[in-house]
Length: 211
Image (cartoon, rainbow, N blue to C red; front, top):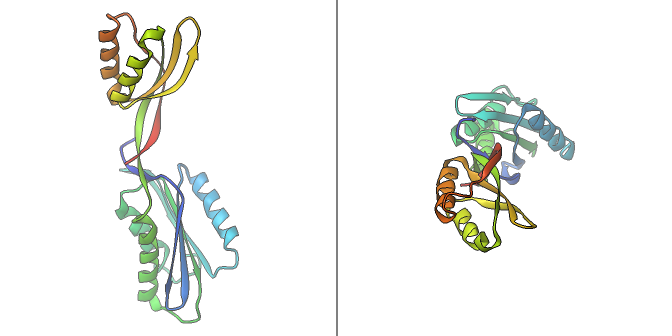
């Protein structure tokens, strides 16, 4: 599975002003370079009349990342690179950020631009809700009706959730657990069923959970 790192849970936007120039930072999760480029294209279309739309992204996390930035017409090193530096220091992966600038008529200078783009990036990085990529098992099992409430309690106890319930002669449950909790649930099931009932893993995948 992929290494553990944090990702944004949602798309967010923050706006601030520096010497009459408006800076609008929009940040979102992106799980591939294609997703990031699609997001950048959407923001550039939304703010087509802006002076600059400065894009940066980090895809992946930990020691395996793909990074990109552009100054989008700002002086070299004054916009995209400072924003990427903020992303790098945030602990976030799978993240795309576009900082839109509407020029206010007063030149900010190199230092002023670096400061403004850094602060714009920080405004979204510091406030976005974060999640963690967690490996999970999706499993199924059939249980008698009289065990349903006890099984629901055990699912909750082991940080799992019930994805589906089908009622026939028995109840067929579709369940999901963090991989690290799955064996504890199986042990609990053996205990309440005298070893007769076990769940069967049908899929292992990753899910993002809020931290």
